[in-house]
Image 1 (cartoon, rainbow, N blue to C red):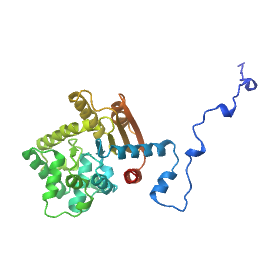
Image 2: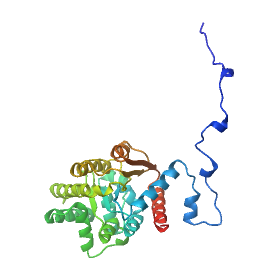
Image 3: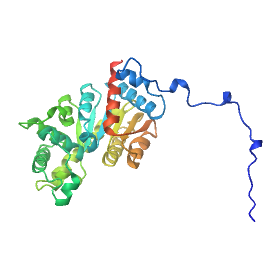
Image 4: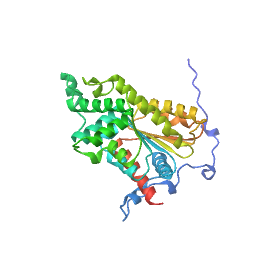
Length: 318
């Protein structure tokens, strides 16, 4: 027969609550809406706990870095197609972003919005009949831009901005981050993964030109990263694989060429869910020798506007 034993709870030692350190007190709690319904009132009414505290810290660090240190923003495609490009343009106009790095899909969505006034096709429907990604104009024009860039010795991002600048007619130039970066003199780079983007399946695709221009952009990104040293910020917005991998390699190139710099910067990953590569390659490993890393988890169309408004609020409060 099994002998079951029970702990004697009457022998437990308790402690006075006055001696217990508390992690939550009334000063940290949220405030209900009052007469002032401005963004500033909302922002200061958030609880000073967990993600609300983290996003406040990120906003302050970005605003503090503006005009003093590098603020590198890396984008995945979903960020553009859910509509937050105009907010990033505003941060560029305010002198916050010092380098804009896009994966291939982000560049395609932005190019299509600027040139044709629409993007984001029905993938499932197009896959069924083999028409997914087969838009003639997108492939032809973007591959022409890449070929021009390879011939002139520019990077992929510059090739797209130059092409859009010279295009006779643009449907929506005021929403494009590519055009916005060019207008504000912000370096913009595009980091392609061969075979991952719809323009690679177009008859005019040129792998050599794609490789030459994207590789040049890798070197350009690496050259921008020393500006992060001791106070800069890198924001990874919605790229789960490509930009974290590119960033890690570009960072080691920068540190190799600059006596271990940059260190002491803030690394923030913003995405709808947490992934291994952004956590390890952006947030954790790069800040091991100093700095601060954090993950903010939420939908891009909510989290990025909130962060942008908060940064602008911090700048206006200076």
